[in-house]
Amino acid sequence: MPRALNGALGDSSFGLVLVVLSWLIVVCGAVTFAVHIGAVLAQEPPLIRHVQKEEQPVPAS
Image 1 (spheres, rainbow, N blue to C red):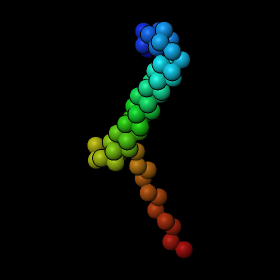
Image 2 (image 1 turned 180 degrees about the vertical axis):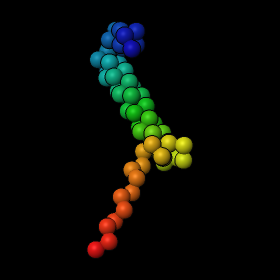
Image 3 (image 1 turned 120 degrees about the vertical axis):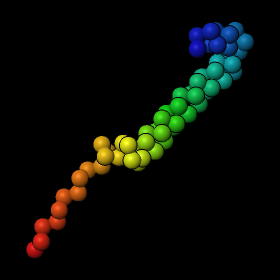
Image 4 (image 1 turned 90 degrees about the horizontal axis):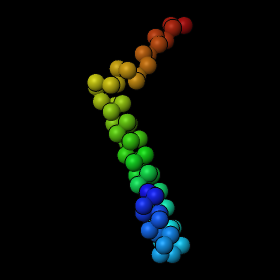
């Protein structure tokens, strides 16, 4: 990012805003992707046994 930031500062402050927003979009996209992949993997059979809690038997009254 420093090279892109230095180039943007030389042009105008508008370039700085575009560089920062671009990086923010990339970071938010990566976090969103990671959360979705984690949710899918947690529901698939190979990992679900590690995530699910065992159900407690309900005592008869």
